[in-house]
Amino acid sequence: MDTYRKLLLANQAWVQDKLSVDADFFNKQANTQQPDFMWIGCSDSRVPAEDVTGTEPGELFVHRNIANLVIHTDLNMLSVLQYAVEVLKVKHVIVCGHYNCGGVKNAMTRHDFGLINKWLRHIKDVYRMHHRELEAIADGQARYDRLVELNVTEQVQNLAQTSIVQRAWKNEQRPIIHGWVYDLRTGYVKETACMEPGAKMDEIYDFDFDGTT
Image 1 (cartoon, rainbow, N blue to C red):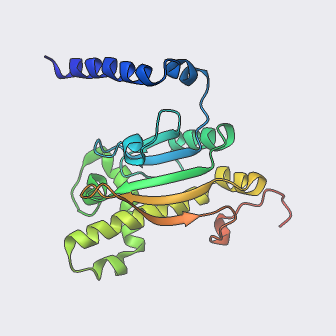
Image 2 (image 1 turned 180 degrees about the vertical axis):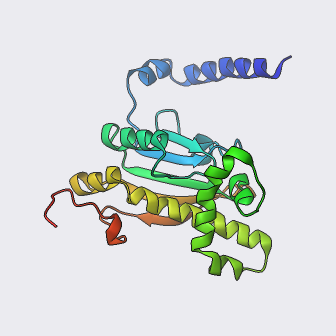
């Protein structure tokens, strides 16, 4: 059997499983979505957001890219963020990285990967900002793990620096921004950062929506 047909059969089994618990499950799903959480995660196939968090369809609004980056020129990510914050009114935005991330690992090298060099450059910038801490770590795996954590923390900061988040903070006191790292080796999630509405940041990134300063 072709492998893709297994996916179609699995879908049929999944539908029957859901209907056996709640005959109206899909009718309710079709009407609307009201997730409390936005998830910005890595595209890595080993990090399924719903499985990791034990959530059901409709509970997570998901955006994924290589190495879970929040880039201020990425209109795809910004569009998803704006919809989640301004339309869906999510209460939490989670940036979730993971140990043994291929994007982070490749960014630590000097190899030329072609087009993806442009994307990995943002992780290299994180390394440069924290190079003293990282290069003081003698063990290669520990240094790699730490860069994964620092990358998540920087993406949390990047979210807080957007006008989308700052406007919601000012007007509605939400969302809380979380930085998590998923450990492929254990299955557990580690929280590495958290920024609540109104959290302090470098003033150069702080938007003045009133025009009074």
